[in-house]
Structure formats: structure tokens, C-alpha cells
Image (tube, rainbow, N blue to C red):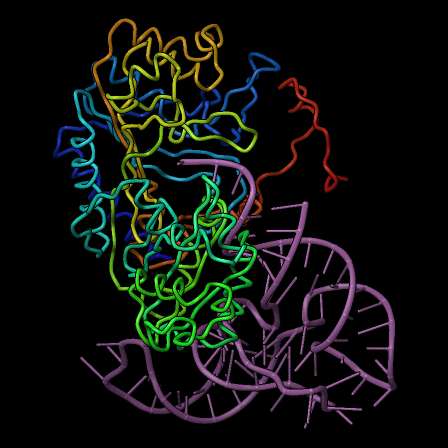
Length: 457
RNA sequence: GGAGCUGUAGCUCAGUCGGUUAGAGUGUCGGCCUGUCACGCCGAAGGUCGCGGGUUCGAGUCCCGUCAGCUCCGCCA
């Protein structure tokens, strides 16, 4: 623990140095602020002077840093504590630390260059080398890896075979192959034939929990001989020609195993991506070291569960220049691309950012696309819109989840391992026992009345 | 809200098919040794086996419930 904290300190110091070298200045922004428009639940703080009103703890300093840009702070950074009231995970704590960066008169490439330098410096101080950072398009990442946060140290890739199975007699493949939003993929695994039947059964159970109906597979004994050249429970449904075509496209040779996923693209990606990583771990074929990649070309919006549109990144993200007019017109909203980028390493999203909208009209259009009309927009983000109207420079930035970076550099599985006094999965502090009830007088002073849950007496 | 794993000495953990006296390492304490530095040697203390119930002649071990920690899904960038 102590060595982890020392490593964290060195990384933080290196990140600061890299930023200051580039002319960024650290500005502290308020912790008592307004509920942010991003998705997570806010932690609320009652305002004694205004009973019935609440501050929110910031989920990120997003709006403040944009105001700083408008206010002439060209290069801002902050080692910012952020708060999100959601259920915990190995990679999530209710409060976490973000390296928050914003710069004016910058292109996406400028921000990525600066951001990459900061990450490289921090990792170097943590004893890990961030090598070349390739760029990968969002759509391509989903196609090849089933996720927008792929682990590139695993040399397994999804191969689309939708066109090959459209007419085959195997309904599990043929039905999705006929649908627009679906995909049928093969995942060839070199030397995968060494997986035992038991292991394959375990993998089947693994993907079932992630939404798969089952897990079809095919062991290649001798390529080019149709069903006779493979061992597979589904070969007889596919037919010789289809089997050969799949094996050929998957470039599978003798001793290789091919897994399949078929169904709605979202579902297939949802289990084939994790399956790919699981195979990497199970087979011991994850290459050591850091495998960073910039993911670019995100959609501006995505369709939520309830059918409403939501920002992929956040509502202040700039559309690609080519999509400006469409956003202003409110057209083709789901097809619009954003000038956003994520830094991913070893299958973990370390951080991301975007160019921001710096014109009031475009910002109103973006909010309108999310169902926020102008009067509401003025009420909630009036200060931002005012600033944009007065004139804000083009700007953009990014934020890293610093705890994840530190955990990765330290080779530790949980960010809890690099945080001093982390909270348990239920959000309790083991040392102080916070959170705790407060006495009635305190509540009265704040204008609050507690509605005890089942745990209270 | 759901699924799973774990809970045994201060700490890390082992404990076989249910079998009578629950172990190891480390730490603590006492003694000895001593140019030590992850010292060495001898000895000692330290246990509601998370908690409650059940099955059994007998439960750390099996069953049910419950609590806690953790991992994952949902949720969350």
C-alpha cells in the first residue's frame, strides 16, 4: 500500500511537471456546485442558508473549465476530485481523481498530443512505458474487437461472416444475417483446439450471462474439406461450402478453434468482446506491457434504452465539422460524428475528451437534440450560453481517470489499491465509518427530515 | 435490484471422505546468543472457525437463513 501511494505520488508529480512545461496552470474549481447534466447520480449537500436547496458535488469540472477558456485562461489543468453516486466496481470509487485538462485554440490533434505527453510522463514515473499510441476508429474497434475499449495486447479479432451464412440452413445464424442491425461474427483462436470441452462449456456459461443464447464453435482439423475437416456441433447445419468459406475467411488452420456470435450487434459485441479478453487470459496469450490506443470517431449521440437520445460523451462535445449543419438542423442525429477521443490501454478506458462547442447556436441545437429546449437550457446553462455568445475561443480538452492509470502502472487490479482510505463496495469508509446518521437538531437546522431506510432503527 | 466467490490466531493462509487434541508462516511476549541490518536458537501466549438455526452419535467441513468483504451484471464513462 505504501509503495503504491509513493508510486501514485511520483506519477502525479510527473503529470504536473509535463503540464506546467507546456504552459498549463492549475486552477481549482468549486466543489459545492450545481448538479451536472451528465448521467450519474449526484451527491447532494444541503445548503443551510437556503433550506430545501442543495449543492451537488461535481462529477467533473466540465463547465467550469469551459468558463475558464471563455475567460482567457488558455491552458488549464486540475488534479480534480470528482464524485459520482453509482454502484462501485474494481475500477470505480464514489470519489476519484481526474487529471483534467483544457486548452483554447486547439485542434483535436493538439489536445491528444498534449494529453499523450502527460500520460507518457505519468506512466514513465510509474515505471511503465507508454509506447506508440495508434489510432483506431470507433466503428472499426467495435467491428474488430466488439468494444470501444479493446485490449490490443490480445491478438484475436472478430471476423464478420454475415454474408457467408445468409442462406445456410442454420437459423441461429441465418436469421440474424437477414436483419439490418445484426451481425454474425467468427472469432478464430489459434491453437484453440487445446481448449477442453469443459473449458468451452465454461465459456458458454460466461457468454450466456452476458446475453448470448449459446456459444457455437468449430475445431479445425483439416481446412478445405468442409464438414469432414472440422469438429463442430453445428457443421452439419452449415454445409460444406459455408464451413470452408468461414474457415478460409477466418484464416483458421489445423488446430485452431473458431467461436461464433450471432444476433443484434449490440448483444454480440456485448459478449464477444468480453469473450475475446477472457480467452486472452485463459490461454495466457496476453502480451505484457502497455497497449495504448486512441479511439476516435465516436458518434455524437446514442439511442438510450428508453428510446431517447443521449450524449455519447457529454452535451458540450463538438460535432465533426462536416456534421455541423445537420446538428443545427436537427437532422440525422444518430449518424453525427463527434470530435471526441478516448485513450484506452489494455482494455481499460483511461480517459477521454473532445473539442467543445464554442458557439451558442450550436450548443442550443445540441441540447435541443437531447430534448432540452431553449428556456430550460437558458435556465440550467445560461452562464455557459452567455459566455459562448460573448465569444469563447475554440477549445477542447480531456480528462484522465488517474486512479486507473496508477493502478495500471502499479500492476494492481483495483483502483482501491492506489487510493488512500478507499471506500468499500457499499460506499462505507472502514476507518471513519462514514456515512452515519446525524442528530435531529442538525437535520432541523438544515431543513431536512430523514426517511429512515430499513437499516435504521 | 440480480449472480457468484470469500469469511479459521493480530496479519497471510492450510485444514482431505463429517471423526474426537483446529495447524503453518509471520507478528507479539519471555529467555538465550550476538557486528546485527528479512539475524539465529529455545519457549510461551494468542481461536465465539463471521453470526443464527438445522441434519448427525459427532459439523471448521453438509443444508437453510443472515451479516460483512470482494468480483461481475444492471447502473455508471
